Image 1: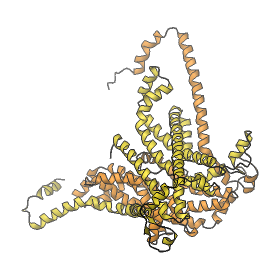
Image 2: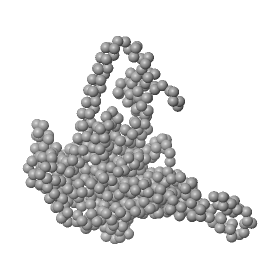
Image 3: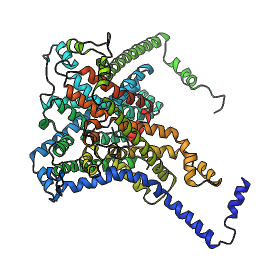
Image 4: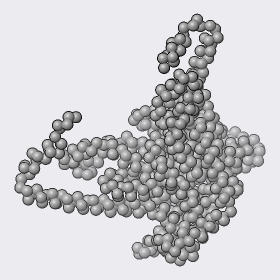
Length: 322
Length: 309
C-alpha cells in the first residue's frame, strides 16, 4: 500500500518531458472518450433495428410504395398523399375510434380489477395470499399468443367450455359462434387482455401498499375509519403516483394490441369489422401491398404513442431519479 | 434502546382493561368481534378462491386438454385429465416444421440474449461509471425508444431487412430482436452495475490494471446475478415474440415456435385442439419456469417503463 502511494505521489515530480506529458494527456482524453466508446455497440444495435427503420417508416409514408416498388420500380415521392388518403377515409376514423374505445374499456377494467385484487392480497392470510399470487403469476407468464389460442379454445363454438357452461346454466349457447359479431369478438379480446394485464397491476400496487406503515393504517381505524375510508384517505394518496405510471403504461400497451385481434381474426372473425390500428396497418401494408399507406397508419400509431410517452415520462421524472 | 424499556403492550393494556368495566361485557364484545372477523375472513377467502379459479383456469384448461384424446374432446366435457394420453405430444413432435422451428427459436433467442447482454453491459458501465455530456439524453432516449410499438415498426422493418437481404434469416430477426430488448436490458443492468462499488475497480486500477480490464475482471463477475436475471427477461421476450417474426420470417422452414403454433392452430381450425394445446404447453413451459424465477425484477423493470407488457 505504501509503495503504491509513493508511486502515485511520485508521478507529478519528475520534470515533465514532452513524451510523458502527451501520454498523460492521451490517457485523460481516452478516459473522456471511454463512455462514448462503451455506448457504441448499444447505439449500433438500436440504430440498425429501430433508428433506421423509423427513418424508413417516415420516408415510406410519403412515398407510393406498392406492388411495383416491391419488384424494383423506384418509389415515387407523393408528399402527404398517403396521409390525406387515410384522413379522408371514414374507415380510418372508425378504426381510430374503435382502438381508443377498446383501449379505454380495457385500461379501466384492468386497473379497477387490478386495484381490487391488490387490496385483496393485503387482506388475506399467508397461505391464501401465496395461492392467489401463484395463480396470478401463471396468468401473467403465459405468452400473448398461447393465451389467445387457449381463450379461442375456451370459446370454441362446438366443444368450448364457455358454451358448455352457459348451456348448463340454462342459456341457449349450444354451438354459438363467438366470432360472429364484432361485439363478441371484442368481448373475448377484452377478456384476454384484462386477464393478462391484471397480475402486473395487482402485484405492483400491492407492493406499494405494503410500504404504507402499519401503524398509520391502525391509527386510521382507531379513529373510526372504515375499510373504504382507509383506502381513500390513507392508501390511495400513497399509491397514487405509481397508479398514474401504471395508467400511462396500460394505455400504451392496450392501444397497440395486435396479436389477440390478429389470431381471433384468423379464427374466423370478420376482418373489416374488427380491425384495430395495428392489424389495419399490417393488413394494408403486407396483405394489401400498400406499404406507403401502411406506413402512414403506423406513423399515426407512433405519434399517439410518443404523446402518451412524454406524459408518462413527465410523471416519472416528477416522481424520481434518472 | 435501553434494556429496561417495558414492552409497549403492557403499557397500553394495563390502564385500559379496568376502564372497560365488568369482565363479562368485555368477553361478549370480544366474542362478537371475533365472530365478525371470522365472517369477514371467510368472505375474503371466498372472493380470493374465485379470483384464483378465474386466473388459473385457462392455464389449467390448456394442460388438461393437452392430455385428452381427440375423440373424448369432441364428445364429453371432462375436467380432470384421468385416462389421459401423451398422443397429442407425439403428434406435435411429428408435425411439419416443429423441430426446425424449435431450432430457429433457440438460435434467434440465444443470439439475441448474447448480443443484447454484451452491448447492454458496456452501455450500463458508461452511464453508471461516467458523467459525460449526453448521458441524461441517452437515458431519456432509451425510455422513449422503448415505447415505440413493434406493431408499427414491423412495416418498415420488413423493407429494411429486405434491402439488406436479411429477410427470412436468423441474422435479420436477431437484429430486430436485439433492438427490441436492448432498452430494458440497459435499464435493468444499469441498476446492477450501480450496485457494485466503484472503489473495487479503482483498487484494481491502482494495481496496474487498465480500466477496461478492471470492468471485465472485477465488475463483470460481480454483476453475474444481474446478467442472469436480465438475460432471462431477454430470453422470455425473444422466445414469445410474434409480430416481428410474422412479417420477417414468412417461409415455413424459417418459422419460429410462435409462428409454427399459430400455423398449426390455423391449419387445424378446431379439429385438433389436443395437439394445439400440447404445442401451447411446450412453448409456455420454459417461459413459466423462467418467469417464476425473476418475476419480482420484471415488475420493477416494467414500472420503470422498461419492459414491454
